[in-house]
Length: 434
Ligand SMILES: Cc1cc2nc3c(=O)[nH]c(=O)nc-3n(C[C@H](O)[C@H](O)[C@H](O)COP(=O)(O)OP(=O)(O)OC[C@H]3O[C@@H](n4cnc5c(N)ncnc54)[C@H](O)[C@@H]3O)c2cc1C
View 1 (spheres, rainbow, N blue to C red):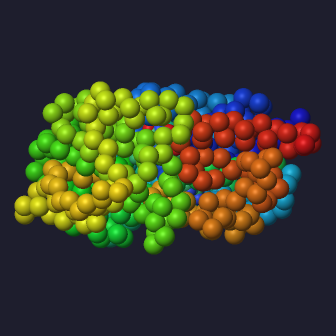
View 2 (cartoon, rainbow, N blue to C red; view 1 turned 30 degrees about the horizontal axis):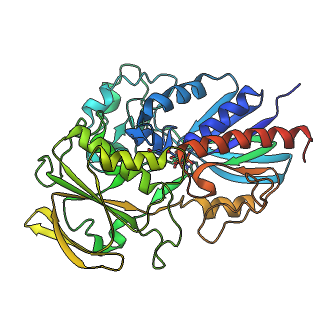
View 3 (cartoon, rainbow, N blue to C red; view 1 turned 180 degrees about the horizontal axis):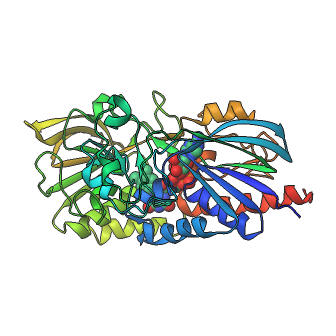
């Protein structure tokens, strides 16, 4: 009998977990991931709260299981082109963008990367280092195949260069390659498109893009990572020196009627995590977290905050920052803020490095996907889940959602939701719906 198919859109931890659970149940799963590798944001994290387990040590085996699983087909560097039909017979069209690489031949040896003369900011390293126009997004990428970025490749933009083709012993470079269109039928579609980081430069009062020593929380994750641009050494961008003090600003655009009304849910905890890690990397650094209200509602979360405060000496300041501006020329930052409570006062402090925790926003593609799939978004742009008795159902029958695509959520809850999606998909496909 032909296997029933499920298409999963988004290959972050939520999409990966849903796919593995579905594949283990015997369904044929097609993961559609827009970037060249699966992994999503979890691949960029150094450690995960509240246990500070190594993020890649948990994620990487799951990524490899996806690639090796007999029931999983990966469509990376791909997007959903169109959908017709309805549950339980969707006709799905996927566009696999040209990588200009024959992936059957590419061994990811790196010879082409070494020769490529074009350098552009690395998306994976959040712009803190450069990648080439032909690149592997990160060392543990799955699939481990390089991609030629057609926007920056000199051969594809100006018909000059071609050194990567000469360097490739495997003959894998193919400048004539075109997008591939794949059509398949599926019983269920799963949305796992995750989040984007709000552009902190849109709120100039926080100094991002104005002061060199103001970075985002994801940039700090990369700075703290042993495989990151500073090999895990805590450094500030302006002069590459270890900062003596570090301030985290919570709710940059979250819980803000001028930006995003909702709480991004994970920032109190990841700022606490990054504080502990920063102290472990640079034991003398003094750390303050400027917050509105502490949201430490998960298992072990309050204990994690207490540990940061009592053992690592992290200073939690209930306040609202007013303005962040350069301190002395290019280096350091002056921050003025107001403390909250009855004895509220205005203060100014100098920091070597400021870390912004920007709102985590729905993936920008959600609007397009919602139109193609005829499902509703909520007021913020996450996929609407109207039925509390079936919390992973969207407004479209047989179209399910998990992870950050449904709303702000951490990794353990994304994994639980992903497993719930697999169970719900099986229930719907078998006709045993309740
Ligand atoms: C700085 C920072 C630190 C964090 N630290 C922790 C932590 O320590 N512990 C913890 O539990 N949580 C942490 N989080 C939260 C964690 O990152 C999220 O809970 C988790 O990544 C959600 O997984 P996801 O798969 O839903 O989304 P994502 O990780 O965002 O993955 C979504 C995937 O979908 C792809 N995609 C998007 N749109 C499309 C489309 N239209 N077509 C195809 N593919 C698409 C994306 O490219 C991406 O690969 C942190 C978040 C931040 C910002």
